[in-house]
Length: 126
Image (cartoon, one colour):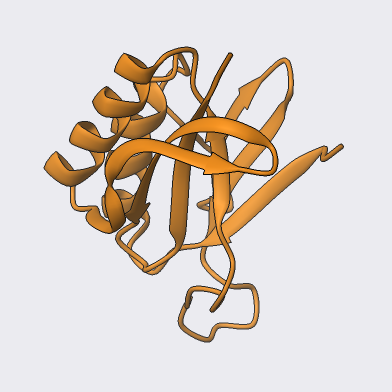
């Protein structure tokens, strides 16, 4: 559905370190910086990017917004969460675990990145 997603970052190196760690647990390589100072992560399903806001204002999180990353297993979700906390992320919501939803049984974990963006790792259970 999406071709790409960007989130704002105030400290590009702290954000790159954080996303290299959490996305690395999901099988993505380290982010690649471009000449404009943006950082890109790419796989077959799309592109995720980090950027300082073009308007020069500080980056801030979207209240009510969550960016979800697909994980291959519950162990991958747990590794994602641990890597995030170890690299400047803040755990939020409930601890990693099973949630019942209209979409089925899900195993989820939530973090706030160094700029306050809320992100999630999700593994669908049977």
